[in-house]
Length: 233
Image 1 (cartoon, rainbow, N blue to C red):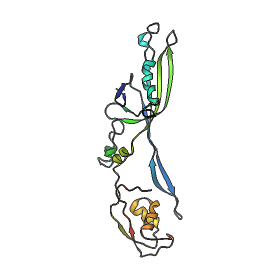
Image 2 (tube, one colour; image 1 turned 180 degrees about the horizontal axis):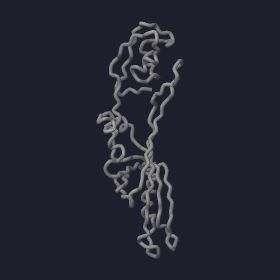
Image 3 (cartoon, one colour; image 1 turned 90 degrees about the vertical axis):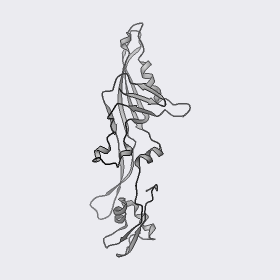
């Protein structure tokens, strides 16, 4: 059974949704290098993952006459999660749980049992509601809504600490030596040691190179280390 959690409150869903949709996009920058047949792609950042879900609510089993119960008694519990809380000055962060095998719980298994993304496993989805649509489809004889569909879009939400802890980023932890050849450019050196050709400036600064277009074959470069926790731009 699917259910929601906002703060310390847990809200069971009246009926399990028939489907959920998860979408994750990544942003890459194109780095154009003269003489190559195509640009190099450098990872910039991930975009917030989104979850789209449709929930169904029905209170018509209580009757459609004088004893009818408004479906809003159920839908308003969810709709309130898109309202601004006075204390936080923003809508609350919510989590959705949906039993065992939640998408993302088997991440390491997708990498031949490796542990590279173990920290990014999940058994729920935490985020904030960025869109909500209520559609009422059945009414009592007195005009009371008895049946509704709620379509929600939820954007992933993680604090900076949570993201850094999950990623557990590793970087080259020592300075490398590299002897320039006639075909080398600083961007190719950065690509070899950092897998990021845009980091050629780090190599230039570390070796006092003012003009990266004038390189001497045979020159020994010190490729600076990227220490743990240091941002790579």
